[in-house]
View 1 (cartoon, rainbow, N blue to C red):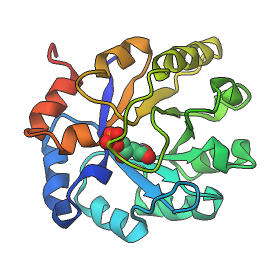
View 2 (view 1 turned 135 degrees about the horizontal axis):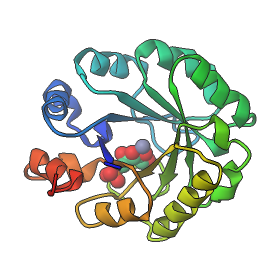
View 3 (view 1 turned 180 degrees about the vertical axis):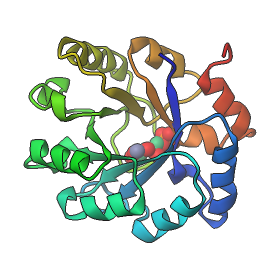
Length: 218
Ligand code: DX5
Ligand code: ZN
């Protein structure tokens, strides 16, 4: 299956957001990846609802919202109203993950769950039927531009095997340190959504970087 590319707006120029959004609209990238950080679950604060509202006005591709916040249940309806298509919560931030995922779906969004690098894939084995996307963190969340954790290849394959065994068609998204040097190995390991922040927006030619990470043969 063809993989999807989701440029992370965290690496965009926040003083030129409209320009950067139009760049992604006009590119062969598939989703907008939007990182919401609260300074509690992760040691950084990014952006929140007003910024996403402005992005949604210009974006012509699905919004893939990654919540790095404690107790995300408080805001599920808010992000649905903002136009999120995929809403991803962290397993480590949810006391009642099964219920949270059900609520995301009942609000009409795809239900995503993210795992920090230390969280085993097996922690999702009892909620596999409630999941539309698993986001495997390939860095410790909180910042763009970090070094990719190599263990993620094995974790991706393990996650794909777990999903296949349960007849799940859930996406596997890889988030952190993805670029032109490792995207192909990640797809081969079983990933089908790649988040690319720095490798998109810090590239000399972002369009070319996107085409490269979408695969030249297509
Ligand atoms: C990290 C965020 C990522 C980040 C990735 O906490 O979840 O989405 O934007 O940035 P890069 O692609 O630069 O590693
Ligand atoms: Zn992210």
